[in-house]
Image (tube, rainbow, N blue to C red; front, side):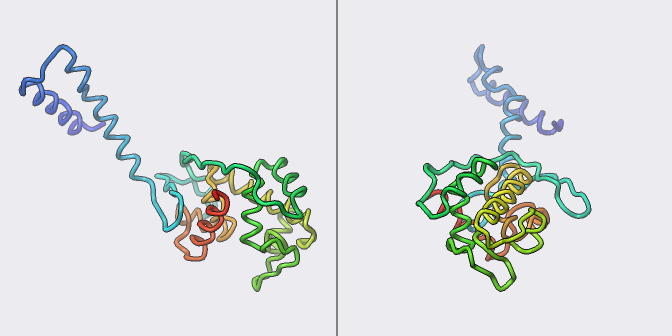
Length: 213
């Protein structure tokens, strides 16, 4: 706490006292230390960065980097209201429930990602080479132990496992989890939040809209 701020709080107390507001409870009501604590809290709130989407992204003051990538974002998780229910019924509900129970990602979130990635088409293949329901890239699939991205169970289990890894890496923040899934965790670490890529911002917004519907 700086001496300048401390003096400001003391001067405020003296001003109020000289204006006829002095009473036995004045010191406790306008305690400079409490006042400065409140100012500090307001200052900390300025660390929130809003992108053109549906929910705030926390920009941490400090980040720990190892070999050029972030090991974690030192952010306080902003609560995300969990949407009720598990979303619309699909032919993959049993597998989605299994993955949700294993990794702790809500069923509706898994369905929202699948809807965005493949439209529930297990044979979907992107121009970049991603395949299956959750559009796993070959290198990512190999890392996750998925041998056949077009096998619905392997794809859902692998994709949900990856969501869980990103969820934990970024402090339990759904927006950052989804941004990492779309643009890669390195991009999220680089920008300290959702990367300013139009595709990624729209991707996060679309999935969160579906999840919260």
